[in-house]
Length: 140
Image: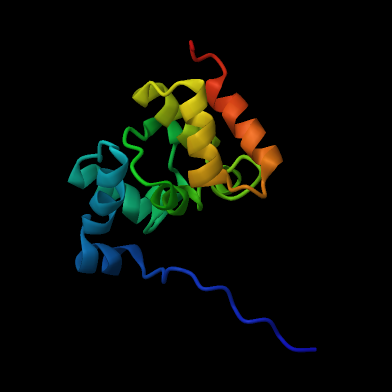
C-alpha cells in the first residue's frame, strides 16, 4: 500500500529563531486585513515564546474580526481556528451575518449575494440555511 503524501503545513521554527527572522511582521499582516487590534510587541514576543509561532492563527476569535472584505481571504484566515466556520456545513455563516448587519442589506439582496457570490446554485440547502442565519434577528 502506498504511503500518503504528508500534508503541507507552515514550517514551525523554534520561537527564538522565528522572532529573530520575522519579528511581529506576519502577526501584523494577519491582524490588519481583519481589523483586529494587535497586542503590543513585547506582549506578542512573550506569547510567541510561550505558545510558539502562529499562535494567533490557532487562537483567532471570530468576534474580534472587524473587517469583512473578501470571503476567500476570510475563509483562509479562519480555517485553522474555525474549520467548521470556514469549510464545513457552517462555512462563512458568521461572515455573512456580519456583512448583512454592517452593510444594511435587505432580504432580497442577501439572497442574491449568497446565491451568486458564496453558495452557488448547486448548494440549495446551504443557501437557505445561511440566508436564514444572516437574517435571523435583523430587522427587515
